[in-house]
Image (tube, rainbow, N blue to C red; front, side, top):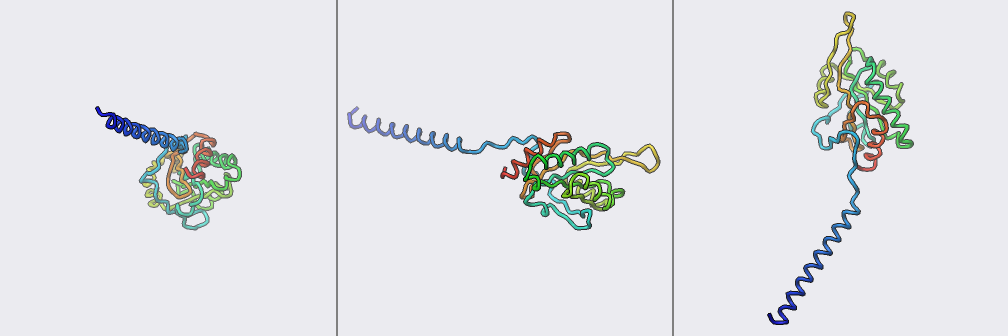
Length: 209
């Protein structure tokens, strides 16, 4: 092979190798600077096509929608005021998470949706959520509205007859739905996950996760 041709081939090979090395270095550098994805402790449902609508009335008689909570992280929970354990525990965890967040606690709002509008009158709801914080929101609809909202959120609830005539409890989904500051549903927090897990999620979402 002529020396000039061999030299040309060698040079081209060297250029290709140098280009490949530069590209690999650039990609590696970009990878190092890219933020790690957030490892949420709850169930990440980003992009879900359900839990999109929440048109109900609050305890003061004002119509509310998900748009009212934009700019904050909203935790939406379905329950009823006579619930003996799951509901007060969940709302207490939201209240505890608010305290853990310090100044950012004002950017977390608990939204309680009753699945028992027959007994949970507006004044009952107002007094109930006030036990957990002045800025908690209670929402109520008609029987048909409640069914429609629960269906959109894929929430189950059903009356269970009590020991006396006319009395009942309600079996219901115990998970909470977490919405980011843009009003998009992002997480399902399992019952009993604890305030630390919720505070962790809120920090991440407020940070743009």
